[in-house]
Amino acid sequence: MIGWKRGKAAGGRIRLLRYTYRKLLALSLLLMALWGVLFYYAIMEEVVDETNDTLRNQAHLLIKRALRDPSMLDAEENPLAMYHFRPISEAEGLRHRETLYDSTVYVEIEDENEPVRVMKTAFRMSDGQFYELTLMVSTLERDDMVRAICWYLGALFLLFVVCTSWGIKRVLKDVFRPLHKLLAWLHDLHPGKEVPPLDNPTHIREFQQLSEAAVAMGNRSYKAYIEQKQFIENASHELQTPLAIVRGKVELLAEGENLTAKQMQDLDEIYATLGRAVKLNKSLLLLSRIENGQYAETENVSLDEVLDHLLPDLMDIYEDKHVRMERCRDKEPFVIRCNHSLAQILVTNLVKNALLHNHEGGEIRITTSPAFMSVENSGEAPLDAGRLFERFYRGSGRKKDSTGLGLAIARSIAHSASLDLEYEWHDGMHVFKLVKRN
Image 1 (tube, helix red, strand yellow):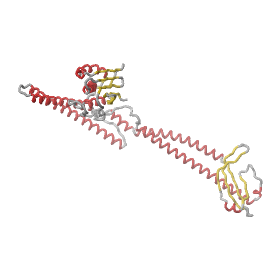
Image 2 (cartoon, rainbow, N blue to C red):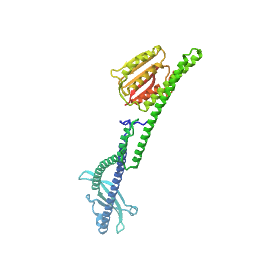
Image 3 (cartoon, helix red, strand yellow):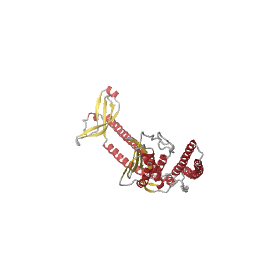
Image 4 (cartoon, helix red, strand yellow):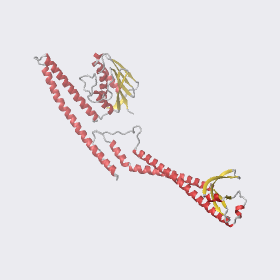
């Protein structure tokens, strides 16, 4: 049957809304960062291009003035001017190509180097002499402008991220609201109870289909539960009656006076086989009821108190094996939330298993604390931990009259009580340990 429990997600798991939100936010941040880098270089390219155009225009004006007034070429270099002329040879002039690059120039007043954009070009005067014009433009204003753009861009980017994060979260919360209502409805489903109506209107087709499938699945599960419950009860009742009749007939036959020793032995084997069949029928019925959640009444049960009531009787039953008992208990008892009858069956199966499969003169040690209970018994060799809790599993050395269901029932009860039943082999001892889940 299907069951759901409300609680915290297991380690490493996060909510779908949070997971989607993080992914979209990370993608938005990445795209914005890439956009910011591209925008920065685009602005820089545009600024540099504008600076180059300014240098070309100024160079063109200076060359025109020099062609009209050649005295400009012979004037002493002005330290405040951002240009100067240098005569060059004809071969150098013919090979010369216009170049633009970033550099620095020393400013004596401020005693520091300042960034400039430099342009070098060549031209020929009317007398055939070539000159090289070096023209510089300060880029301080350009750098200040780029820095201001970056600050404004950063503030805009931060504002955009905040608004986008808030918007994405609100949109996703609204989108996933039908899913959350469906999950809450699923949490309210319990085995053996009718499926409650699902009021979850949504315009999202996938969520509509999911809701319809969940309702249909719940109805099928409830129907299967009822049919299985009826089948188990009917099958158990129908089997118990003929088995009881056959056992009664065998007892009557055994009371006959003309039976041979061989016939008595055969009747004894038949009676023992019928006893195992009755026991098997009851165990299968119990296991099915546990797994179907038919023991819904739960309470806080102290397994220490259960042990106090059961141990004397069990030790008397197996006193012929002369098993030594050691009981270790904490000040605080081991308390679980479980059906009281199932808790008794759980403890009985574990202790009986330790006594039944112990060797004569062996040892059994039972330890309880607020967090766990362990039952240890001496043995010859470790068991197959991978198959130990399977139904009808019988390892080497198992008793012939064992149904192979005792540990399967114990694990099923432990699971229903939110416990883990573990097995290990330690220092010549079989250790079965009940541990509360986190």
